[in-house]
Image 1 (cartoon, rainbow, N blue to C red):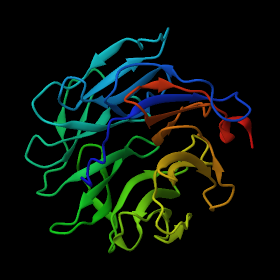
Image 2 (cartoon, rainbow, N blue to C red):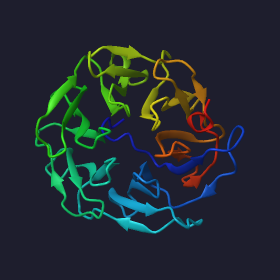
Image 3 (cartoon, one colour):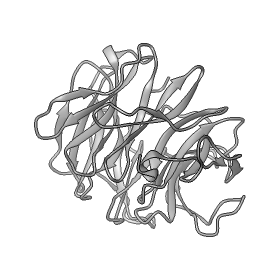
Length: 300
C-alpha cells in the first residue's frame, strides 16, 4: 500500500442529522474517483480531490440546489503533477494541499479561487496531510523520516516559516488535526509500526503527553477528525472486511458506530454546524449521499 496516498476508488457521501438509526437509501451525487472531501467554513461548498480526468486535481463543489448530478463544480488545479489532500482554512482565506511538483510531495497553499499557488515546504522527503489550526495561523502536517517508513508530526506558520516537530517516534503517525480549543491533537498511529494495527491517539499540546483512545489488535482505526464543538472524534474502523465510521469522546469513552450497510466508509469530515458528515464510501464505484444521525448533532 502506498503510505502517502492510501487512495482507492471511493464513494463520496454526505450524512445529515435526523435519522433515528442507520441510513436512508443512498442517492447518487457525482462521479467515481472523488476523495478526501472537506467543508468550506460556511458549509455551503465541498472541497475535494478527483482523478476523473486521469490525474489527481483539486475541485470545489457548490451544494446549493444540489441534484443527482451534483452541484456547480470549479476546478482549482490543472497540471501534469499530482495535487491532493486539500484542507480549507477556518477563516476561508486559503486552501492547503500537497503536490509532487518538485519530485516528492510538499505542502502548498492557494486561494479558494485557485490563485496564488505557493509551495510552503522544501524538503527531500514526502510531506502529507496538511490541516489547519483553529485560528488559521498555522498548518499541521506529517513529514516522512528520511530513509524510514515513519512519519512525524510537524507544525508551521501558514507562510511556511517556523517549522517545529511535535512528535517523532518509531511509528507512522498521520492525519494529525488540532482540537477546536487547541489543547489536543488527534492522529492515527501504526501501533508498533504495524500497518494492520492502526490506533487513535491524542497528543496534549501543552505537555506533549500521549493518550491512546482505541485498543483493537490487528484492526485498523484511522482517519480521525473533530466535531466543531470538540466533544467528539469521528474515525473509521474495520468491521469485518469493510470500514465503518465511529464516534468517540476525546477521553476514549462513548464509542458509537455511525454508518452501516454495504461498502467501506472512511475520511470523515463534520460540517461546521455539527449536523452533517462527509465521507468516502467504496461501493460499486458509485458516489452517493446518505443520511444518518450524528451524536454531536443530537446532543448525546
